[in-house]
Image (cartoon, rainbow, N blue to C red):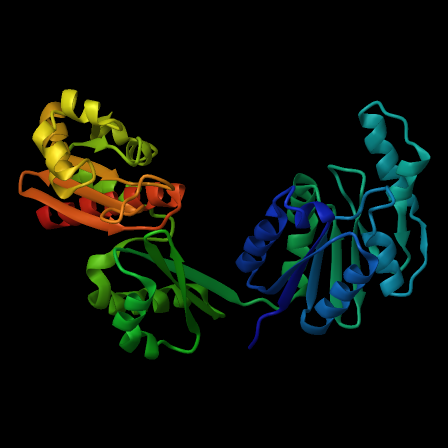
Length: 417
């Protein structure tokens, strides 16, 4: 038994120019996924007649449901309505019910209905009007050639209101849907290709109704398991069973599931174990402390931070030895060790974390190129360090260093536990 297939088309030059973000497609995709309707493609086209008509034709060939946003305004650059009428060979006429709805909307806001605004009530004769309670542009439902086309406003809150109130319930009742269940396994400390090699025996025996996707990001790889079928509870049980089989292969790299973040998992561990933590940051410039404190309840375990961006602060405030800095440099294992130990001592915490590196884009040398970062964690069991060789992108390096530091903290906590 197969899913109904859907395509989303967004229309507007402003999206292609990068002037606005297409949040509509993401939201619609999530809602269709909840219904068990498979999204097969998302297309964005500008305000060009030929491109829009071509997008309609392409969508009709491989989708049962086509959802369109944008291009429903009353001005000359709003082409969706006239082009849908042309595509289906239909005339456009004034829809009396739509006119009354538009008139009532303008009256509500104390505005006069102009001739231009009246055009909003002109609709192709072969469509079914979808009321827009939040705006002046009605939606349109076409059922032609075994494909349903739904046209909605591009304004996000108007589209969401129309989808939530009218369209999603109707789609659920009129389309064949299967249950779709996702679970994400989050890993850190291992690259995508190495991860793939480790879990290959497990991946090769996955049941046919469970699909695996690798979703890499900065210093993380997410494994998304997607199951589809009739019984959602059974799908969940099947996925959980496969994850139990997966864990022995990569247990030391898994830090959480679904919406877990490395900082929330670290925070929960610290809270459960009644431990405290402090940070000494150079290249991360306070971003590590920011991520830790972004978790609600972090005041229970996070005590404070020293942002020792300048070597004078490392010496005078953090008490890093001048000899260490002159001999080995700020970006060195020796320096981050002292930073981690000294911040822990100064704040009297159970753990101290330190970062020092060359975030870039300048400042690198042949010996220590841009992206060279040292991190250290100090606790009652000793000190552990890591050297990172990252990219030349400053913001990526700050984020990656922060995640690596939190990952090292988590590894230490798991050893304590």
